[in-house]
Image 1: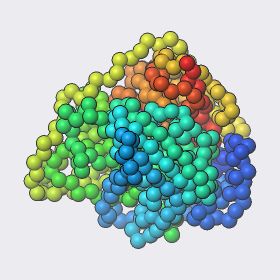
Image 2 (image 1 turned 90 degrees about the horizontal axis):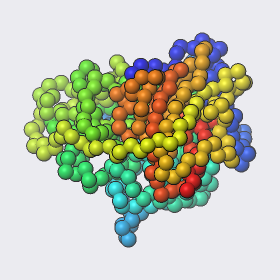
Image 3 (image 1 turned 30 degrees about the vertical axis):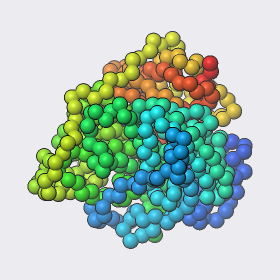
Image 4 (image 1 turned 90 degrees about the vertical axis):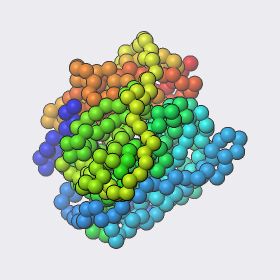
Length: 500
Ligand code: C2O
Ligand code: CU
Ligand code: CU
């Protein structure tokens, strides 16, 4: 698939887009006052919105801290322990709070965190066993939590207007009535999700499915989630929320170009692109990658690739067998030509009971579509500042854009309606349910479109045809949006209502 990033723009065009990234013009009445107050206040680590108010982020004034690659180990985000397991429910408590985190060697970075860690603690859930999480907001601004990929009641979905005020708390219920998959949780505060996620409000939520145990895929400490994202830092180590193209530091689990020690055996890696705006071109320097799962869980069978594109919000799971590299040099994971993670293979022999069976898990049957719709993503670049649009309109939380009948199957033609000279790309994301990709740009799906998806890349001037069945017991309002979170923050989002 030809996944291109934004074409090179001239300085005037960049300034125009920069004002998009920084402006936040689409904002609800209820939040506008808060935002103005935040923007009027002096910049401080606890109040990054102040910096957010600059009309045009600088492309040149901020130096990038030089990092010597592969000097620090990649951490595996800590697994959170339930505070209770009574009544068949795993109960967790997670504070949302500012913290100083160590991302770059020798420097502290002010961040927004879940429970103090830049990559939030990992929740390990199990199909059929409910999880309840109480989040307490210790920030001086509104926040909320969305479980990306979660099949959850509307009241627990983290709707952009369903917010936790400073000092408040909210209980989210996750029934986990869905197959095993790599989910993630992140902030979804209306107009501020980009800012909040950029500053660290992101973590893994992994659903383990007993129906998949017989496959004997690598498990336990050989099943490793890796959050990939980019960032820009100033000399002090502070995050700079500027132009996306300046986020040249790639982080793996919150460290810049780390190394990871592995045993000479198979590992399952759950790769997530948590960058606000980036397409990773993942490869092992030419060696084949074995893919076993995409957003919504296991594929029918493993597939082999030289390179896999992963756009913002998407997940892909791969298995690497380091036994083939025992005694050899390190193995690198690249983003294009850029090595982002080094695997150091220990020479100590180990037994490996895991395998990658030729058959993994059949996908659920596809329904018969009864409704067909077109949805489009675009910018109005003639407006000053430019306006982000879904179906030609900026997001209005008081408007229901689409009603879908519970249980029905629909085809959506997701169209990238941007035109020259600003043909941007947009990853499309739908809450609540997964979908299947039927076609792309008038042709067959790309390799990246395989399996159950909830986020799909739409190239400049391209289109993607998806089929979705609203197989759910839940009714109510859910959003769909561009997962370049600066775009959704500016209004490239709409909402659907599931009705009986
Ligand atoms: Cu990952 Cu609506 O978001
Ligand atoms: Cu989501
Ligand atoms: Cu977009």
